[in-house]
Image (cartoon, rainbow, N blue to C red; front, top):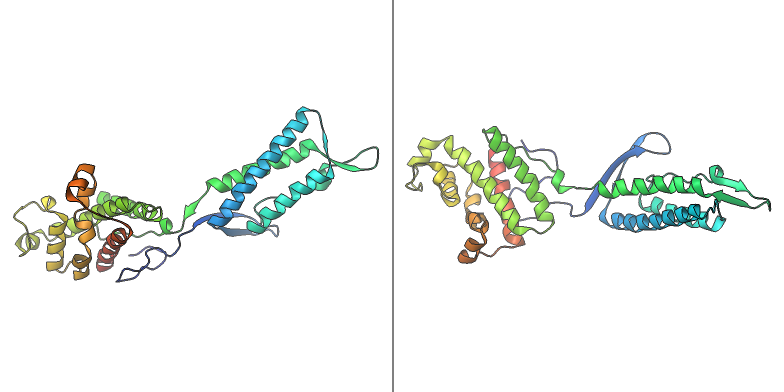
Length: 283
């Protein structure tokens, strides 16, 4: 059974993952009371990083004022602080608490209002902590797409395949094509070997079977040919599998050089598609 998430195409080399931006999910009380879920994209993340450093500079400035026993701050500084908070509000609504002017106000002898440095500094400490937590809590949409490989009977192998499926999505997003191909190749081999071991007599008798009697000694090409012959997987796997058949040679640099294998985004994309076809065929 396929886990919840964006649907993948059945056939054809179409876009693998529907979202290529970084997303942050947070649940926090809104000003009206109920908990709301807000999405922050990558461009907003960049703006938040800039503002984080701005607030850190404010923080350091106010610490310095406290050390010099400057216990009150002028209106101009508070206005600059509130402007920065307002900019964050536009990018990430409800992320930062509002600054309580009344709680920081102090009227001096001339009748002018100034603001207590210690109160402002306490507020800034909170703001900096919230932004630090926000910038550290990041997840990517495609990685959260989970697929169950329930047709893999061995529980330990199934756990590894499901783990590697999540990992290869992360690798694809950061253009680690070699890693994607190796992870796909390992997952495809594990799945096909399990399927053929459940039908070992038929597999050994297949016309395309190699001479080795131990199926675990078969190459990925052998597993694919026999799997297609026994109709355990469709012919699409055989037609598209060129990019993953020699994936073992990519593990060691020496073998990669000797085999003169070339790989890139298209090869990685096809490798994932082969795994998707096998998953579809067995689901």
